[in-house]
Length: 426
Image 1 (cartoon, rainbow, N blue to C red):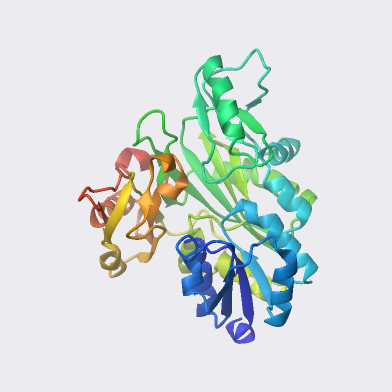
Image 2: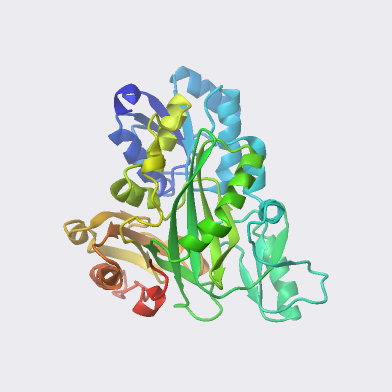
């Protein structure tokens, strides 16, 4: 694959800290990288890592098309943000370059109300939904912007008075000014990962998404880690997998990757969020090491060739038998970061696959960021020999990472405990 891609030019839409990994991965494949958006390099650090960057808005299609032609760009890709997907698809279309998804697919899969209807249509369990006018609402409920992501605009309500205030607040986080109301399920979570190749649908992995109420009852719980594989896999494969595949087929999905975040109740996975894109959990790094394929590299290959891979990955997909793996998500309390230590030490340890910073010294975690995924400051991914090592390894990582503020406070929030993992790992 790499020999055919050497020196090809990839334009990456959006330069946030997650996109740094797209740039570095593409460069490792011999590809020349260009990053564009309208932000400065402080907000778009991927620009500083790329071989070249432009300060052109992702929706300035005329200017971008001119630059694409002048610079002989071979392909376009975007990463971790729902709001960029339609711009990405349109730019690919007008420049006759491969887009892994269609306009219709992205419109449906970035709108919670629309994809919940598709889930219901194909018997893919999703969380009970209410209308604001319903008289039978069972509290608590959660209010979400219909087109939101990154936990923005989420509000948990315990009575009718809170509901009205939350609807108004949540609408402000929606470009469409619309919200959905769902039963609030406080139980355990999993994320289901899919890889799509030429109309074939592969259940790549199911990871336990361990969220923690570590910032007070009024703050949305955020993930402190993922563990693989999940105990729900057999039930999901026997009861839901084929329904999901029927839904993908009807949507006309051919290529790409997807995650489905779910609440788990009585062993059943209820979808509450979908992303037809890369996710910040970066599970593709784990899949490359333990299963032998990397969906990010496949997406890069698709952008430049129109094909995900020439390999048959069917023999490599093993969600139930993959080695026990982890993703430690280090949450940072509000404060200005002075130092982040421990990442280099961890990279020398057995089983650690990667350590990724999503914030850097000098950046501030604000009070307004509480309850948002932007509080995740460091991710550490790796594998262990057996399930019994998972918790102690993840706790060791949490003890090794030190995030110090400019006023000499430790900003790392409490992480994973044994009770978070028990009963969830195969």
